[in-house]
Image (cartoon, rainbow, N blue to C red; front, top):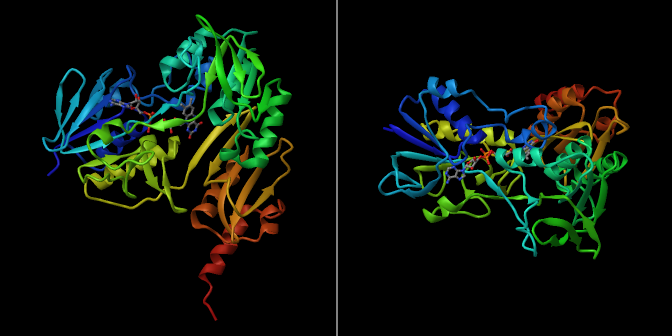
Length: 414
Ligand SMILES: Cc1cc2nc3c(=O)[nH]c(=O)nc-3n(C[C@H](O)[C@H](O)[C@H](O)COP(=O)(O)OP(=O)(O)OC[C@H]3O[C@@H](n4cnc5c(N)ncnc54)[C@H](O)[C@@H]3O)c2cc1C
């Protein structure tokens, strides 16, 4: 009988696990431990509404009263430093011990820092926490020169936000296109052009070789030998899953805490979810998905499994972003082998890009096409077989393709 559950990490995954455990009927002791000073907040807002000033304060996922209603003991500003699996305890900094029959690791990921000279100079920032976002918001002023190192999702969101705030923005991207992994080459190139039209200077094939400055960063020396003057530098070159507790406890880790498709680690008493977890994928393989919605979904799955209701849920990557005044929604991995089919014209109107593998829909990205994206998620989830020309034909409703595929699947074979 489980009577004590400890959740380590007070982010969206940790908070969603609280919600799911209580709604699954768990009425035992529940402790949520977070090393940041805030209650769980919406990390995705850091590079968007919080930096633009749309939000005065970091948006909490639930108000303080909600945690009281859920009868969860919240321990903030304290890190868990060790798991004692034999003694069934979580040890916190300062040596407080919390009893736990089951532990959920929801420790997230840490922003990666480059290992080049000057990387620890003041003014070389990363953006992962509310504290960092608030510091940046206070520091940046119109007219300042911002160099963003890394042209992925967060780097391009920051460039969008900073451009709107009147900063002069340069993106250094080591590969030959922006956003390739997230949006695919074609949409990545289109988005780059939009950013360039809005005044962002994009340097492809250029990484950071060195950060220049004595007391504070004054520029970035690119791998192309050019110097990019900077008042502020934000490094956005990815994140590494926080596996330190799991590793110390001897749990299997491989670029993330290795879990099965209900979130169980190599110890049956410990589960892991969210950015920290390397979760099996629907399309095969495994990795940390680093998305808000997958973190939520994994938390619900693991909570049910902890209580003895395992419903396997291999993950399909599902996320969104806002860049250059467009809303993108992504399902599956758009960057990969197969055929890419564009539906719509990418001229500012709603459009979708699909990736087909052997005629089956494997991934989709929507640009301002939320209604159709809902159907695209079903096409991807079912691995629906479609005709590429029909998919590209905007005179045919996407819903019709879904229906036609269902009818074919249900038809008796001759
Ligand atoms: C700037 C930014 C923008 C983003 N935008 C998007 C977006 O538009 N769309 C999208 O899908 N995703 C986005 N993401 C990704 C999304 O925010 C993450 O996938 C999600 O936050 C992961 O949730 P999590 O709870 O697993 O981890 P986290 O949110 O990282 O929370 C983990 C928490 O655990 C704490 N912790 C770690 N170790 C310990 C310990 N030993 N003891 C106690 N506490 C500990 C950490 O301090 C942290 O507070 C964005 C991320 C960032 C940084």
